[in-house]
Length: 348
Image (cartoon, rainbow, N blue to C red; front, side, top):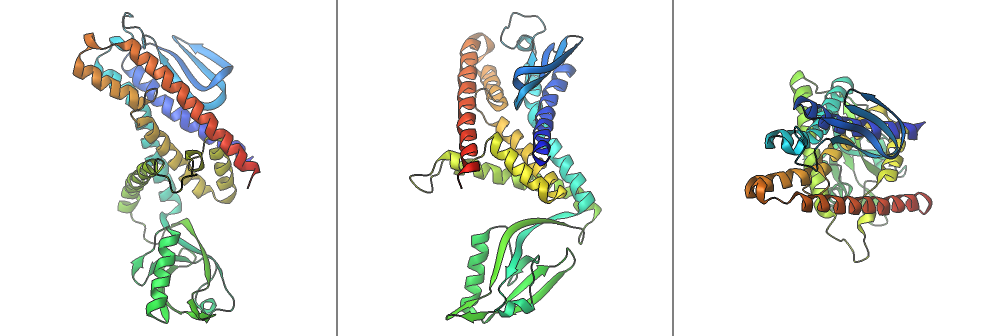
């Protein structure tokens, strides 16, 4: 049941992306031949006016086929359209995914509260003094007036630094999603080391303690911007090896891995599932915006080049070959990542 919800979410995000292309093409009076969700064998289809709508067996993407995409001789076709209309159609899928992210965040935050990212206490060692001040479920907001992020190593370093300077640590906590509370927690001496004695994990909760109309409206935009920035940093890190044996397939997840993670989140919390869906939508938009042939960003890049060098000097056959070649490479990469995902399902 939980994994079925994962497939439904992925299908919805693909539908939103392709709907953007479809509606933009229709608004520009372009002849849309096919609107398809998935690849491979068609499960069922129907035709309305000039467009055939398809649901295919492999939920790995989708496509909108516009007449005249590869043939400039077709009157009224895609390549005969003004450059700004083509740019609108190419970018519409990305725009729809980003807008969908903002809409999900708005619904989520206005219903369940604003997001609180930080460190959640998972357990407290019973032999420490900390048990008198902290309990499982507390969210650490500040350590000695410094904001805590969902970065475990950074939090560990702050606690270690505090233990070297004092016999206690000032913690600002959020308990039961209510008001912040400042507690002065003494360290416990165990085997000659001053320890706090907690196990913690990065987490995300939703709290209504500081909600206002202004924050409900602004936070979805801020959350989208911040997560987009982090995703771009993550893309950059794919090409930086932490060790000689590290592989890109160890850093990213394919469709199998995403379905597994989505299914696990669906078991824990519906608000977290909504947040994760928004993140997937944003990720889909950003990935498609990359200037890589076969992706929307690559098509937009080629369109800009065409505008610079002039349509008459532009060889559309070369672009077609590049798109096909990179499409094969992307499918190959997806297969490799999916094989890695399946291997991690059985090898821990």
